[in-house]
Length: 429
Image 1: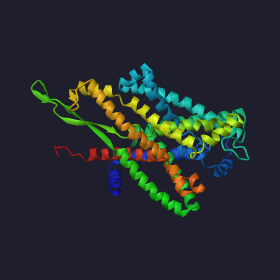
Image 2: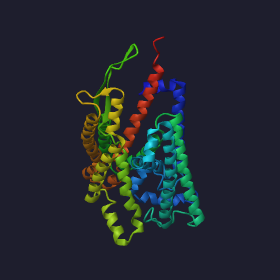
Image 3: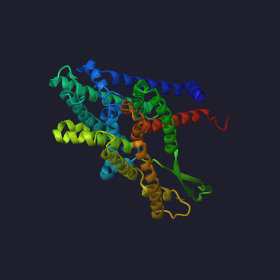
Image 4: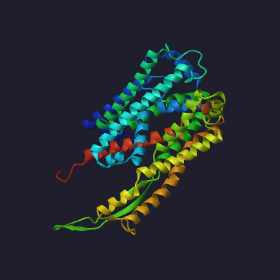
């Protein structure tokens, strides 16, 4: 690792990219810690210390501790991630978006512009909801003092506009990292959100129970190693290309493969499921007393059988659905046939598409099971530790581990690829 870092900082252009990325990450964290105007940060921190467990820990983990603090970057990258996923889903049912997706760079630029508009709309909706809950005292239940210095319309409007502007700034920063830095900008920012809250969670666990802290660290290392192993696993479908005589030269005749990952859906099913299960908790204060009590009992606690069942079924369903819209066996089979390729033992065209669909369905089943088991692991840890304080601060959730491992592996691969390009000397030298 030290050797790789030395090689990175020896290359001037790559060093500049890494330092630029680190600078953006620092600015992003500063924006997450800076309170929005009109927020009583002293009261927020006092009430935040007494609110833990359930939906509070999940929101804190996914927002880097910014949403419940009502900071400038309180919404983080979640509106953009949600808008991107929604645009991918709409491309299946809206022919215009599907045509833009197939147009190449120009079409992708238009889809990116539509995603930005959708991000602003979602940011307005999310910011309005969060500020309304803070204004009525439902964001941090049990807080004796108001979170806002003034609950007037002008103050509320300023806070909402500040959060929406912060979301736009985060979106711009992520695109800057993708263009001028190292790795995918939005992925690195959400990675930063998740990692930022780990020291606080681990320190609380150590204070509560040092033995549980050691057990959690050791089990967390094994869990990360297992996730890395599964994330790297793939089924390689061989593809051969026949030789073709063009003019006086012979082309083709090479063998390659189609890499099909076991976890083809990635982190998207977990994010979708977490968002859906968060909605009832968010809408509970607006319901009647009986409906609110039922939601808090069944759809907020992660140890309730109904919550666990809904979590597993939604993850599995979203995994199959997302894989079906992101990997089209017919398009892949047509592309292989167009360039004179074939899967050994399978006829080109429709038989190849059917074979790829069969392989994809066989891979998606263990992939969905893997996501569901990974999401339920914290509940198993709760039963083993039997420590309520540790349960409320358990950091190794399915979403957090997948985000950290996935983004970390992708960033390391991109850095290694750029290092290999700079070490390639060519045949002339």
